Length: 255
Image 1 (cartoon, one colour):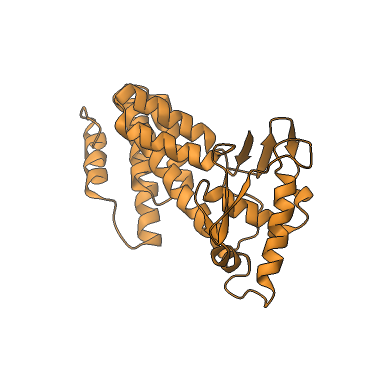
Image 2 (cartoon, rainbow, N blue to C red):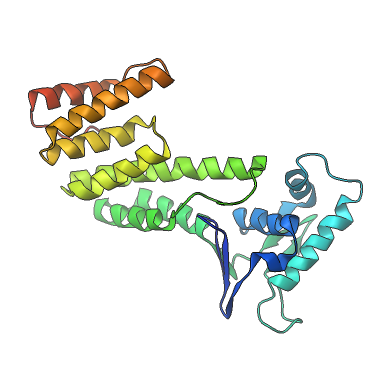
């Protein structure tokens, strides 16, 4: 089994050793691997790969060049030390894919856990979201050049992690776990400083933790940030929460 980790620095672990990215002999062969990993189990056409590798302007000889890159990957991802061993890189109609039966990718495990969490009851949902968030350790494809496809994938998962953190925080707060709710709210706020859901978790956690002054300061910080960056006021639910914190009334988590 080959494990590909794309959260944080890219890591590739085969059952018998950790593979070194430099062994794939260049940036573009590595990027082919990363593109196939992102679309694990689904074919990527040669045209699609070429468009990403050369940003829409492939050279005249791109087909043979791409096939050469894939040949390097086949050897690097052989399922064993024997050079004749089968590879995790498969050829399909007009393109390539990674064998999902022999390769796991943390992004896809993360996505699967989010799907399972949606269908689960409250305690199981929180446990699955917590597992997913533990996988999301660092920026996706950290250290890779900022090609358009890298930026797109990075931003997509930043949003998914932020939403998962908010959901986990709400469930934790409903369960009375203020510390966990606060931690998830802080994560959401770090990922997206303008994410009002994350701020709401932080503010309510501070209030429930008998830190009323901190909650009021956090709201005022958010209010200034939204005014400066977007020219808007906090959403209605946050303003209602602020009023309740001011009055110090009991408050149930806003859905």
